[in-house]
Image 1 (cartoon, rainbow, N blue to C red):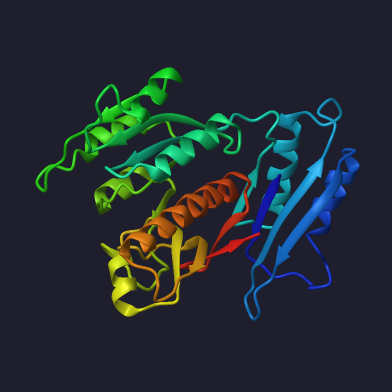
Image 2 (image 1 turned 135 degrees about the horizontal axis):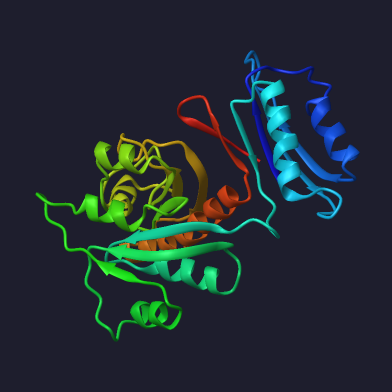
Length: 287
């Protein structure tokens, strides 16, 4: 997979920079799909390409050099290559609080191969006993669980930073914590959050009760990047489900939790498959 983000628009009749397709063909590769987005009246070009190749004819290091040269030629703002069969999986840490439905779903997805990541650890401000289902699962698979009791005065962020320093990105699986500007700047990598509401509506705490009180007919879940603004980061994925006057708070919550699990998994998978690109300041392109 090759993700390309150029700062200049191309002829809309051209599916990708010609040097890119020529390079792949000259190395014996074959393009399977090419996604392109050229915003109207914007001098940018977004592209995601999937191709097959023979690693004997085109060694991984040579591929890196070839695409680096193309990126420099076109002054690409972002260029990422991943070869799933050869490259190491993304390393992630999961931050969670008391509710663990999203965590459990991620762990099962990781176990059965639906999520191609390496989970380095799980960090929580909620104590779980050794008999807890999650703890037993983590112990069985050798994944450390770190319980860090937090207070309003001490959010233990420096300790968290120490635990996640070797990760590629973080996942907030209903961690219910607001990360400080210090943490975001110090970590410096992407953080994916799941919000139990259809942003930008019902931000903050208890969106299910907000939705019930508002009498909505659609509820949803939103997965987004974490920024300094509360629930204001660029959206990666959203999912919805219809509700009616027959639903109560309990059924709202049950439906919402199912949406959260699906939405977060989909967002992580899209991120790992290089389908997500930053678009302007508060938006994303998701191929």
